[in-house]
Length: 169
Image (cartoon, rainbow, N blue to C red):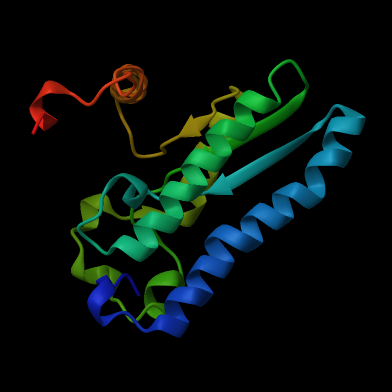
């Protein structure tokens, strides 16, 4: 499950990293050359809204943050081609995942649980629109634009030839 690092089963954490990071990277790398050679195809990677939230466990959210960063970078790499690249960030979605993780989705408020069919339908609409990042539950797309813009502006302020004055000895 999405346990905290201190109590996480190390083998289970490694399996999660292998599936969510290594397998996803290798599979994407395996299909990408053919897509680019044909100038068509789509890579759709499934992350999670937990990529932006660490209070549910750093291992799971960390792997999903990787999926987001990796896929956003890949989206930029294929710009100018007909290859589509999208990362989907679902929230709570009714799937077998919950039971397999030892969690009960019905402990969550019904109004935040999306059906898998609705999530997939929304993701496909986002893919057709060419979205790099699709968040099926996000009612106000301007919030995503603000977030991504703020992240880019923040990154732009992280470089200097000397440490910030607040770090002066």
